[in-house]
Image (cartoon, rainbow, N blue to C red; front, side, top):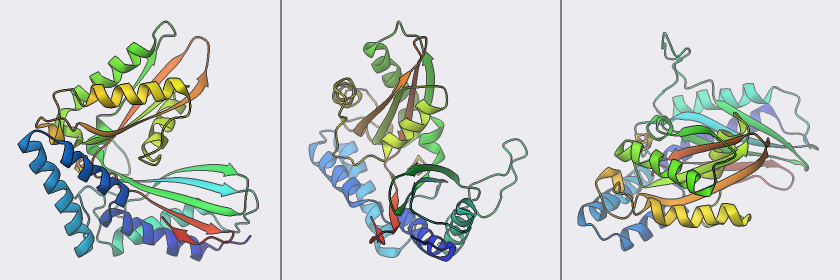
Length: 286
Ligand code: SF4
């Protein structure tokens, strides 16, 4: 299966612009559901305004938030796909064109110390996984700094357990308060090592909102944290109520006998992401 550089640039550019302006319908449904259950009048108003904001963005083709984020890509490359070009270069070119043509804010500085803007939102952060098959699947997520900055990672000790994980996650949510723009999607990665735990936490954010972890311990964490986080005095945009988070997703990975890495990646209510599949019989955007 041949996929061309032009295919990648054209299709990725589309989802770069689309993601900024069109919040995933499932996310909108979760916001509407949360609004119907919310008991605090101010939080209800805030949720209405968040829903109205994304409607205006969709109808007028403008970004739903001024922070159009770091461009994060998760790529699944099938072993039967033949590429005769540099995939990373093509994704960066699509990012560059999408941010320019979509009039999206360019938020990347070339070096964290001298902070000179690259002026085209590149380079993107690109994770590539090799899989079986004849398709190239690309997920794009513009990740705003507000919620990303309040995310945390801790190398816990093996003597700690589920109660300590819950305490660490709740502490993270409390420290973030309104600055992470709740209601949140809370992605948690437990296990792996120092670099893997945050990566699986980020992947957790992009799981379907309705799915449930298959491992019983992960599922117990999801259920307990969903309840306990929404009992914290944070609420929509930090102004109280019962809607601090819309979903909690826990991913895990085996780890060293002497390690217990835990990462919490916070995703604000602007949980934007789009997917594209190229090759095979597929050519579809989700
Ligand atoms: S945290 Fe999210 S909603 Fe808040 S400013 Fe950043 S991208 Fe926008």
